[in-house]
Image (tube, rainbow, N blue to C red):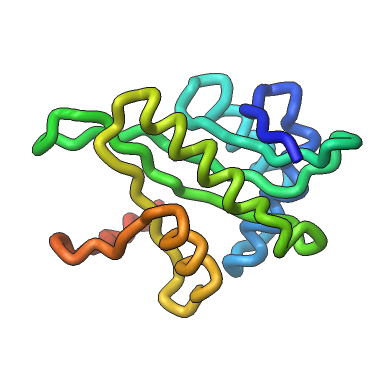
Length: 151
């Protein structure tokens, strides 16, 4: 398996798996809008996307997407690991581990103070993977969400 940073040339490869990721979380697929969303992030350098590819071909095994943020308290960069997904037939092959290790290395190289990730409370598999990489549950801050409805 090899990990590469996604470019615009990877959109056709990435979009179907991104759509499956959205469906996994109960969203409607919207393949055209999903592709446009990814294209915009890449064109504007608004996110970093890593792809896990099979060694012998360009089969996409999984991806992760990180967004840059900043901490005013530490005066440093923070990376938000917003999306990570492994294709169903590639699970239990340490794909997520390799993606997370690559993201962690990038965070260190950019002098980030931390990476943040959130997952469903019942997604124990993901929680165990995150903890194995070194993520710890935040016991200092309680997180809230303010939904903004577009009207």
